[in-house]
Image (tube, rainbow, N blue to C red; front, top):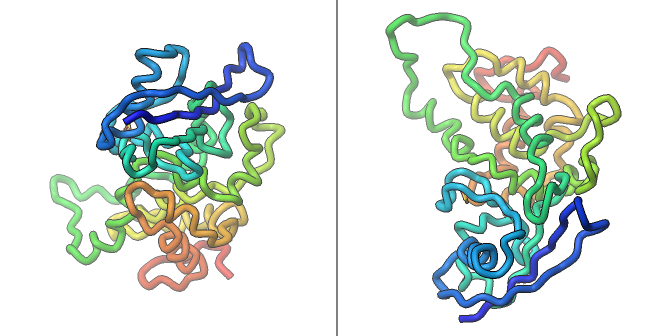
Length: 255
Ligand code: FES
């Protein structure tokens, strides 16, 4: 079948503002949108820029806005979007070129959540024992692949991020909402029975720039390509910040 790809292009070296270009390619309906993008790049216009790596929905590199929704191009089949496909970069992050955005503000929020297991003892050669029920408590949020589809679908993140404009230096920027993906990755450790830094993470999140920035729009849950219940995870962290989760120390600032 022939599909029409309408792609938002922007090259900061030559363009003053983004513009649209349309390409026609022949694909099978069982091909992925990523395959169609490859046909454009390899056979029609080598200047088209986009990220991809694993091409199997694992690395999280190719989140983009496809027909108005945040999707992974390597997972979405052409037959599920039809023959007219519009593709834009994900929103709320500075555009580097075409479909490539600067992910650094996203990863800055992620890193601020202390996203690794923190413990204060050393059990030596022994394992840190965890029951199946304790493991199940945070299973959903272990599925995150850091593609940014959730965070860049969030209207609060858009409003505070400065949009697609070049990024301001840190001394000029005001603190912004960390976004759903950062909270999902905090949830993954806050509810891990082996971790000992829940109170520290909750203190970071018990702010307007943390969980209280969330307005429960549910865009993040709709956008997640891994089916993570993102809004539910944020709600659980909100309850924990208020001291309403058994077995967790509330943050020092909890009301
Ligand atoms: S290319 Fe790795 S998730 Fe799509």
